[in-house]
Image 1: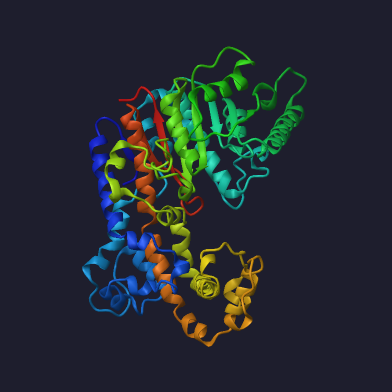
Image 2: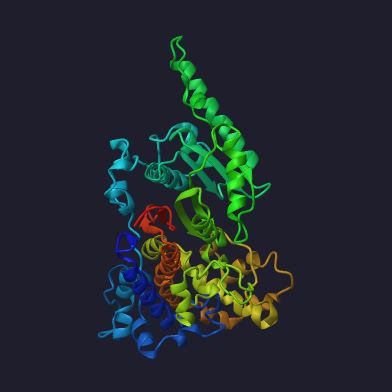
Length: 495
């Protein structure tokens, strides 16, 4: 599927879809709940059904990529078991679409609404060249990586369209970071923008970048004006208003409206309608803005892109009846254990499947790092059982090192000593020969990552439906540039 529409006409199908996702994932929880670093400690290859082991024992990393992309069996096995043969096609067909929509006109909430289209230019995405994006003004490119440029150019179009659909000109960007999206919305799209982020996070940087952008436009205006009273974009448009607040599951609608008052109402007429935006809101922050959207009368539209799903709060009993990040909807909650998503499952949903598939084909030896880390885990557990899953330092160019060289660098910040002879133990050499199987097991887990993400996001759409609000889930960004590429769009007043 390309986009998922969750309105009164489609909600029953969306409920069935969520149930199907949960049932599928529950059958493979033994896979999603495994950590690849435990490959040797937990003898994970033996967890695979014997028929899978026989079919996959000689499969090469490049062949794994082909199988994951096409679903066609690879390797020398003449007959694959049906359960394995169906796994990749089933996961692909169950997952929300990940290929980015071709234009804003393909987004369901906009496609049939002529009121959205103030100018024909908004019917196509702004041109984007990741190597040299000259189509974005320098003031907005400065300090912004290529990935983020791609995201904010597309999201700015969507936010403006949704604001127009909601009949408002104000936007609140939650978790705004250094304000790159907010700056583009304010100075390029001429929207009234407020940003909300943690106290002491990025406020000083955001304000400095705002000043630089405004200065850029003033300078450009001075270069092109010929003595008239023409105002530059930096003079006629106001930069974002920045407010510090930690938005969480405990944040109330009154607190959110107070942010709006502080940002906008001191500057002019009272703002009683705005769109809430969150680009890659981490963990519960994504769930929080979805909940605040339903509860805050002034918020008329929602644009939400989540990330860091492993940081979602999930256990309602431990939260003593307080709202949790997942599940949000009554329907998914009613599915019970079938819809349970462990930390490991939610963590794998944050991985970049498309990028990984390319590495399998182009640089499979670089993935040997997964085997190195799993080997090192056996050494750590052998010496200190209670330090299992310890965080270790990242190691650059690990594939070009011996295991012992990698281990010494990874253990630099490890709190206790590891005997040198353990890093050079002869049995590790034989285990190293299994590196391709480690990569294969990791690939099987990653195959299910989009299914897990689909359940988390569909749960949010169902939560909105249960509050009488239509929404849609749309793949907005190129997944090769931005793996968390699905946006949740919603507006009040839809059927």
